[in-house]
Amino acid sequence: MQLSSPEMLAATIRRRGLSLADLARQSGCSKSMVGHLVTGHKTTCSPQLAARIATALDVPLELLFLVPAVPRPDDTDARPPHPHPEGRHHP
Image: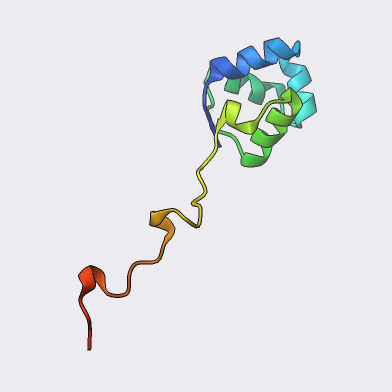
């Protein structure tokens, strides 16, 4: 999952009063992984790790990571194509 901003992650960690080691321990990853995300050397991680980081920091996932949009049933792109484009009828 794509990190939206290393700066936002770092600021959130600071606001929570956690060290990188604390966050790593609470989210079940290495301190170096958290450090790489904070410095921007890594900009992605698994969706599971992203969720654990957000949970450990007590923030919505969307605050720290770019969450892929899930098509809603009423989105026009999600509808199946019309069986007869442009009103043409096929015998």
